[in-house]
Amino acid sequence: MAPRIAVYGSSLVSERDPGYRLAYDLGAELARQGATVVTGGYGGVMEAASRGAAEAGGHVVGVTVELENNRGPGNRWVAERVHTADLLDRLRHLVIEPDARIALEPSPGTLTEVFLAVTLMHYEIIRVGSLVLLGPQWLDFLDANRDVMRSALPCIASARTVNEAVRIALIASKLPR
Image 1 (tube, rainbow, N blue to C red):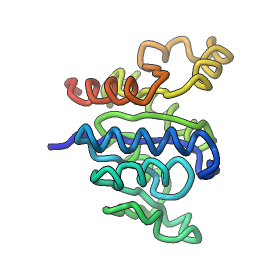
Image 2: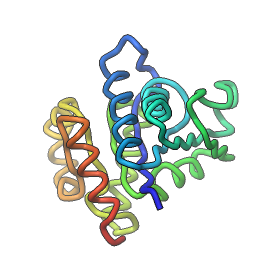
Image 3: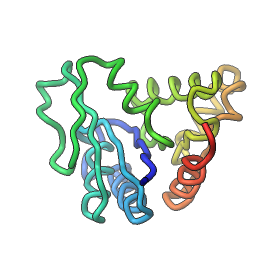
Image 4: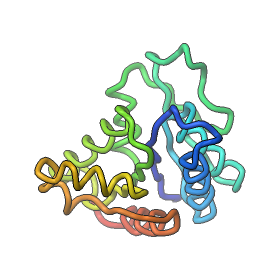
């Protein structure tokens, strides 16, 4: 069975932003490596990762939520839509169920997913080390919040490149829960 890798990131990233290309490349590489890409299903980073994966021949799951019905059914690259009734159910599909997670551009939603993943790893509900923070902005974030994040650092992997993030996520996806 293909590993399910969730991709988190801001919905405000446009096609002109470097973060869009990074997410596109991430989705494409995950698909080339045989992973199913799971995103929040809407725009920005979620769209870019979905598009990259779909255009590389991969399977994309988009997890949408009733609260956001005004945004429509999700981006056009989603092959399988999981529509949830509320945010807590959406988080279950985006954070608990995937085999690994990769976070890109920070936003309030992304930070929610990252902190929930860290908390669940702390309690060994999800695989320790199954969260990868991709990009230098995360190193700045961790450094600025080192006192708060000190106990979380053993649970988190960081990567500077798409290939490194994919390699780490795929390894983590095979570890026992």
